[in-house]
Length: 112
Length: 110
Image (cartoon, rainbow over all chains, first blue to last red; front, side):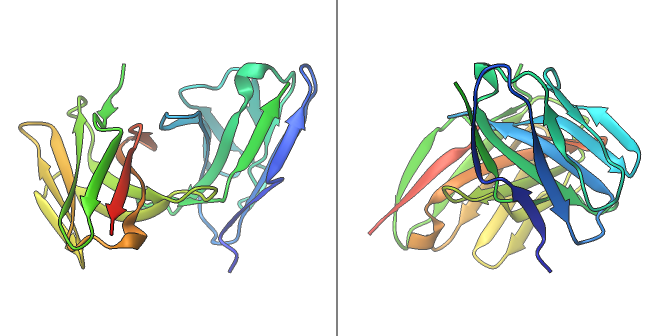
């Protein structure tokens, strides 16, 4: 049982490039979330999903897109990377009736 | 507009003593409160939670207190141990989302 896995661990992008951050969970959780954490700040919700085929915006969705075609996977897409997207990105998941979220180890992204 | 506030960016406590981390919130619709612990280069891990209908929850060395009238909660760690040195996030849930505070860095001194 690997829990929540994220790839890659680190990535450097040039302005305008695109990339997909991968997130997979093997706990059969319905809910999945994407957060970003900037230095000295808490986690801000980017997008979330309550099940396959259903996604919704969080606090800071601009510049990002998501899809949820399976229960296990919840990729986050950056289409035109900007320096403001330099951050650490965390994916998380949980069961429907439980508030506890399980987090992945994070992806550190730098946009230059 | 911060709905969940942790006003102390850092806290230093002697090993063996009590650590008290505080959190304030503004939204009376929050129905569940959680504390997460985070080590460098790792994702946050769940520590303890409390429902809005309770005022105390205890799990080993960790106790969370909720004062709804003051919109305040606190996490007590007794006794504090070196492995408790980490960043602690307070969080609150409403609908399907969780709102996090900015975190408090706890240093346990030998």
